[in-house]
Image (cartoon, rainbow, N blue to C red):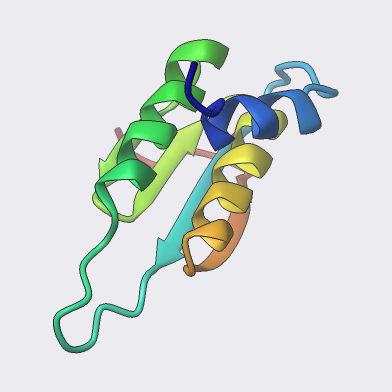
Length: 97
């Protein structure tokens, strides 16, 4: 049996908040200078978090939107583990969709 994916550890770690009336935007930036590229396992774990919590979607390659604070925290921590700089924003209002 293989190791348990990091996504499931993060889901357990941040499984404390419930959905509210807010949305959250997680913005992450990986330093991809030279031949370094973003690990495929990052995106697999991101998908695991999204599917397990039934929350969120990619707006762009490095922008994730969700409705639950715990999803935002788990995604942010995942990105940090893979070496990204991260910001989480709580959306006060949506101007256009």
